[in-house]
Image (cartoon, rainbow, N blue to C red; front, top):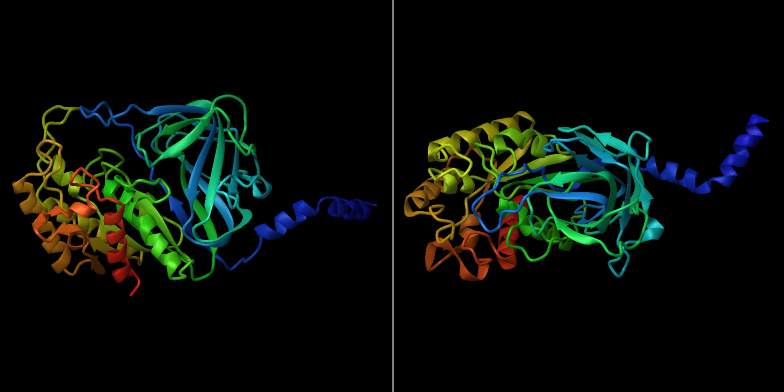
Length: 414
């Protein structure tokens, strides 16, 4: 009798059976981090026009992301690691875009967490979903939709980090969110993992706003890392994932916007699934804020020397090599002409040049990507080339990010 009942259940549930079989496909595959957004910190009021308080989101929240590597199964990583309160996840779905770029509800998958459709994420912790069978190609656009029954304050308003938010009951399975509002703020989703081929790998691009992509015009092309991923696709390299671990305003030595590189390196680089290589481009904010008045006080930001930053770089290099990873040093890009008072001065330019000489000549990195050479103006090498400037003499334009991606490809794809 029990056998007949089980047989009838199998016949009645082919979709469940196929989903279970799909979730077990390619057991020798390798999980890679195919999209990333590093958790940031809430920043107290700054005396700048761009500062915005953390946005509070509640209801149905939909994110649009482009994965960088192909695979047969997906899982998402959520983060409350820098949030002060628990985050309740009422429901979650993931779906690819259709040919028109809209959400493909026929391919949508409900996500679970240890088998449950909902979960509570304690403050200070991440949450990893169960795998779902959903084949994707490199460059596939995915929609991740969460229902947040309780309000969540998300830090760092930024036009490259956006969500559609619709207040009210759970609409995670809906194809459209009529009446939703676009909200800027760091994503609660910190990663999309893809199960790819056994030899698939992840390259982590680690840094500040120039890695995160400030100045880019399209959230689907966040700076040089997404431009680099596009080059990989053009070359048919669909099993190399690119994880963007940039945070605008981030520093190497001290917390500012996001935890200091020295504090977050293990979480955002060393422990990333499938990581083999790290590209380090960071330090310009340490240098720029050096000695300036600290609006959160008391006093000024500590003065930073080249020796201070080199000591920080050496720690990151040692920690990467202890894990058997390659770490590639990137030269600091031009910043003279930046409109922030006191951020870029001739004296600080001397230190930037000293740091770049050390990055190029010390031999301590596995290789060097010369982003300074890729972006500087031949007629005025201390400044960014006008065609590569987004407008603030600091952050590259889309063309500048493309030049950086090509410089990275010339080293990383040898």
